[in-house]
Length: 259
Image (cartoon, rainbow, N blue to C red; front, side, top):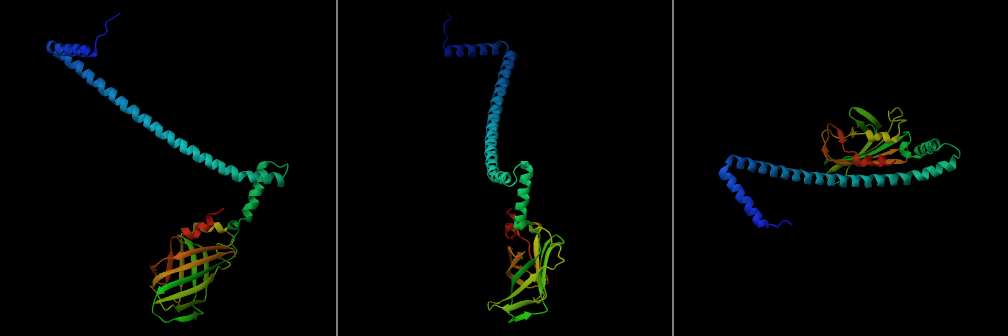
């Protein structure tokens, strides 16, 4: 059996060999050291790359697990929603293919959804407050106004009236009020209520209001078909002539997002 040489002695022998090689064949010693340095650098880079690769795989695995949980949750939700429909379709349309019976059920539910009903009537109640000390308190029988829901240069739904009201509140502001109705030839007639989600702004105007007024705020309440109500807030602004805008309809249109 070979005699075990202590590591300290082996290290001393290797060091002596390198010193001897350096003295006798310096170029060979330099080449050996260069190879050793390159090998060490290569090994270190490989270790670093491997560690980074493992870390990246671990991160990808966590993301996959998270996506899997989300998909499973969504699938569970779909199963919960679809199961009653399948059961109902089987009871109401026995003997029919499940796809056809499900389509009949879905079509019926869509027709029952008030947001899918075609627009037949609409009215907008508008209250607008401006900064003014005028002591006005009047019913303007021939000076009404309008409220229009638009997208770009397109009017989606229009309401208007030939009359309006104005009064001093006693707080240094005048409030204008009007109830505007949708005309029978409005482009919104016959379209599903949900199509109003396309609206990007509301433009309102009271013809009795002074031009370039300081608007302190206001509200627009739109009632469609008598049972769907949408509420919007008019922010503070300087009127453009008499035109006033609300360009942030997100909260008001949120009611149209429910299916």
